[in-house]
Length: 162
Figure 1 (cartoon, rainbow, N blue to C red):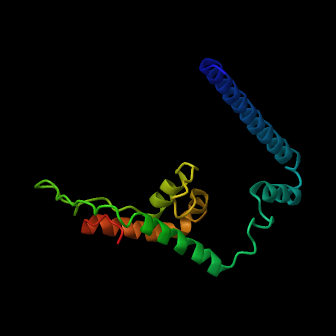
Figure 2 (cartoon, helix red, strand yellow; figure 1 turned 135 degrees about the horizontal axis):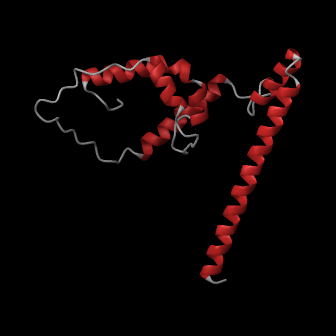
């Protein structure tokens, strides 16, 4: 197959996939809008539909995973990242120019951190210790800790993870 033909075919497939995704998104939106509109006068049924839309009541994909297995998964993942980067050169530290001070800044609060987490793209990399979707679900729970870490890092001028 000639290169130009291959490229044209690939572009055509991408365009078809985009059209399909747009149509699917539109159909889902129309379905849920009409469902909510039809059930507006029946709050009990409306809440059941909303719970279905949000995925509540469904068993999790891995309901059989214990807390200990969950913890081990992340410990193993962090250990693997550390071992794969163990031979990397140590970072260079550079002092700031004269007159630059980190002592004056507006501290971040929990709501700013939670909002920033929620605005992250939904992409996840295999190297991420926590999938973005999980991070977004936990935004309100972890934002106080992250806000404290960020503010302390800026106050003390330390920006590397120990």
